[in-house]
Image 1 (cartoon, rainbow, N blue to C red):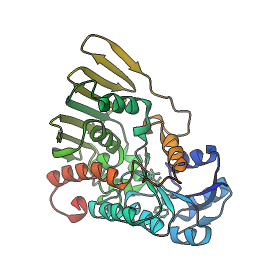
Image 2 (image 1 turned 180 degrees about the vertical axis):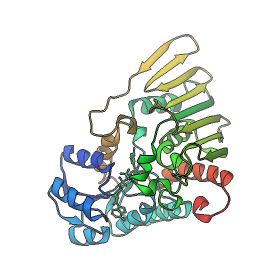
Image 3 (image 1 turned 60 degrees about the horizontal axis):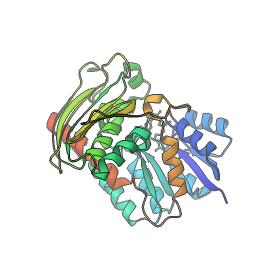
Length: 336
Ligand SMILES: NC(=O)c1ccc[n+]([C@@H]2O[C@H](COP(=O)([O-])OP(=O)(O)OC[C@H]3O[C@@H](n4cnc5c(N)ncnc54)[C@H](O)[C@@H]3O)[C@@H](O)[C@H]2O)c1
């Protein structure tokens, strides 16, 4: 029997979700939803399924097995909670929510629900991330001493003007950190361990006047295991450079630059190549959306919750909101 799917929010990233569903054996797209009439009409024409302007109307009429929520950040937690409460499984795009309060609400809704939820931190499925995680979890490399990461990308004023929510606290809950660098924040804390304190700064350097939110940020984090991480991210770069992520352990240095290079203390060097994207998604989004989506569908009948759920996704949200709290004066939507 086929698993039925619907996509809520038919903007830029939805293409990756539509493509993954189309390729997935045993999954059938049955409906689309977008609050913008033009986007909805385009999606209905492109995919030949019924369209709805409202997610509740879609659930009422179609009752899909899984919804993919690809809406702006302020429309993640409320839409996801509505779906879970109605017994519909959810794949929601990152971040978990635009505020900590909404994120907590979704953590609680998920733990009360019989339906499952995944948050799209697909880069955990990258071949390099999986290799790093398995090397670090065996203990064979000794203790982690420290780590560093950079995200040096390029976004233009037009990127924000074409989707005004991206540049606002109310719609995005933040800028570069919430929208782009969050993947690397998530990887850093997943690979190195839980973050106990963070000292950071976020600011608007080159897009001041165009966006309210930050385009540049840095932080130092102390992890529960005693390791320290240094992090720098900006959208002022001239191109989308490969994310860098280095983890130093007692017995090796793990260095991510598209591919993973592990240099052991005895001089041995191992390289794990990353998969190359053949999907419509931009390569720097990561190549692993499809793997996460396939894994989620394959585990729908399992009793356990999905491994990247709201409680996992809340960790990166907390780190980022802590940096905002240290960087900006008080309006509540920036912090809470
Ligand atoms: N995982 C990744 O690598 C990745 C990559 C890109 C974007 N994203 C995430 O995907 C989400 C969408 O980003 P985008 O760039 O595609 O945005 P977008 O603005 O291009 O698309 C969002 C769509 O949602 C619609 N929408 C808004 N509110 C809605 C609602 N309540 N119900 C139904 N439709 C609604 C809008 O009309 C729009 O068509 C964001 O959370 C973003 O962070 C994730």
